[in-house]
Amino acid sequence: MASSVLSPFVHWAQTETGISLRVELRNVKTPEVDVTENQLEFTASGIGAKGENVYHFVLDFYKTVLTESAQYRITDREVEFSIKKETAAWWPRIVAGEKKPAWLKVDFDKLITEDDEDEEDKEENFANSLSDVLKELEDHKKNRKKVEDFRKIYLLLYNTFQFVSFLCILILMTIRYTKEGPFSMDGTYEAVGKTMKFCQILQLMEVVHPLLRFTKGSILMPLIQITGRLIILFVMIDAEPRMQTKPVVFYLFLVYSLIEVVRYPYYMLKIYDINISFITWLRYTIWIPLYPLGFVCEGVIILRNIPYFEETGKFSVNLPNPWNVSFSFPTVMRVYLLIGFFPMLFYMMTHMYRQRVKIIGPKSWKTKKE
Image (cartoon, rainbow, N blue to C red):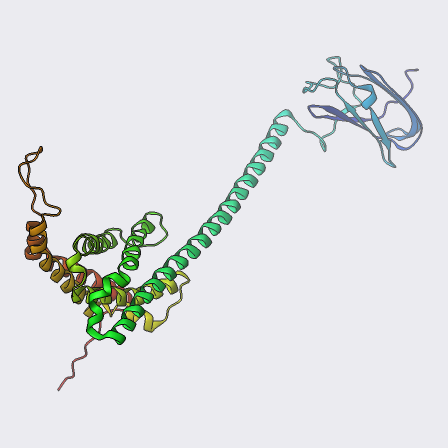
């Protein structure tokens, strides 16, 4: 090709995997393009920097390219080339020689450096990580909602079952008393004792619920109350048949049932944040007469059982024995009645009063000025 043939301006850019060329020629006609592994030769007539002429250039690549990947398209303003590198890598320059032709320019519109691509990768990775975090948060919210739904359903079923069970005990005792009067008291434990024991054992779940964060509140208070009832039921009543027929068992079961048929409906409503003022007031008021009555019944049962356990020696350890120790269960019962009974009653009443003040508030007394 003669030296008088003009060269068009060619703008180049690269990525890690390919190169792009933009030839500044308008109204290109009859282009001749020859791409080899090491070179691109271009000839075409068109309007360039020197007006309408035949333009020609030869570009020796820095490294080999894939000839079958070479593509070009002609627009009204330019000719665009897209060629893939044989090996993915960043080239320090596009031409093989150190000297760059004057007509070869950098395409700043498409310029991407290695650092830029790394930055793009970082941005893409950050976007993907952010997307993953958001997805995990969404999944976590869904899982929390499932757990919350399960918690509410479980607590509703538990409280409903306990309410119905204690209500059945109360109804059965009432029916028996209506038919037989005071004579029905002798058979109270035989009639409802198994149900009462099952319900009290099931109440141990109320110690587990705060541990699982199914409910709020302390563990100590339900643990003390439930443990005390279980001792009365299984140790003081179930273990001594003569106590099972006493009228005090009837009154104790009556107190237990009245407390629970009020308490569990309150908890059922509380699960779904429903507040019925009368139920709330009843829940934190009915304990005022019933708790002391329950303690008195439990104290009477313990007191009446002392001679029975002295006679049978049940739960006591007498000498001689392999461990050379003795333990008198009746003595423990006496010590509790003398030392522990009233402090425990005071502790329970004080705790319930604090709860009442917290939920309902103290009664305000207004003094009339004379």
